[in-house]
Length: 484
Image (cartoon, rainbow, N blue to C red; front, side):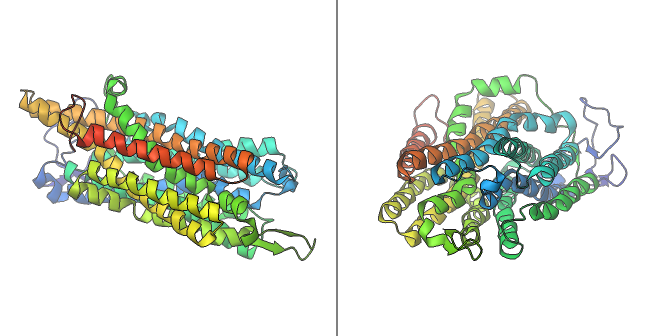
């Protein structure tokens, strides 16, 4: 099988005929014929093209996650000079609000970002979505300074929400490039590499705190603004658009009528919602729950206060490990089944949250760290396994339709359109779990000065997720069950 180009310098598989939905002559890097399930096509060059797009997608999504979670780092720098209350409980509530807002905004725009891939092309939208990250970065560079005021902080924190949309568009784009047998690993790598942005920005924040001190948070933006430009350029020079990826008529409406959309969204609240929520809140939880372990004497004021550098040394560990293991969830789902992996994972999340609660009551920082790191690990594995379940659900349904007489091509097409739509919906709804996590912590610390009530809530929720997984995806006989 030969390779041809649809635009100068673009690798594409030889097309038998151009897509009827788009003209074959156009500007930009468009692939008009893409057949990843065709083994010969895949081996002849399709795999190389998909891998190239995956690499740049991971990098762009990584930067998006870093900007989205930027305020989980900035709050470590904030003092009353920035409009933060001098009362500890009020300051904690304000800082949780500053991390909740970008989480909510990022979650809200994910469906729009999913639709944008088909409307504008995966490559084209990656360029735009990367460039949009300059808005919150420039806003923080201009206005994050002493005397800013809390309202100003809220506005520029909200702008960081645009980074949360990149995940949805990136996953939708990469899902279209890979065959069913490799989706778990590909989506796991794409999402895991993106999730690493949470840990990376915290490491950058640690480096700034340790060198320049807590009076210079804007140095972080000096690192990320050039990387944003590089991500946009890399997408423009090396990625491709797929003509076959389009916003199918009524796909969003049809998928919202499917009960599996809401089952999977609920499960994704438990996995990704936990990951991003804990990633944003972890530093504040440590600061408020174990302040005596991170205290230091200020040589100027001679007052003892929480040292953000000591906290920053620990906060990146959870997001780092949780991101690295996300592909493991996809890999396990490819081999032993997405539902089985997800079930075991939720049971484990409930168990280790019990460890965190025990450590909180006993005021044991070492045990608390062990439990929380384990929570990040299992939330990362669950992220990979639940996303693998999405295409698997509709693939299983397609097999049933073929057995009932539907042509194979029609069944596969229907499966793809619904899976792509569900990726956007589940990604948006699931990300709101991060909002719930931050709200739960905020209320728990306001009411009880610890996170114990939040931990109890998390345990109950994870057990509900495990029960749902059994009932819908592992128990045969139900009309709504899908064994995957």
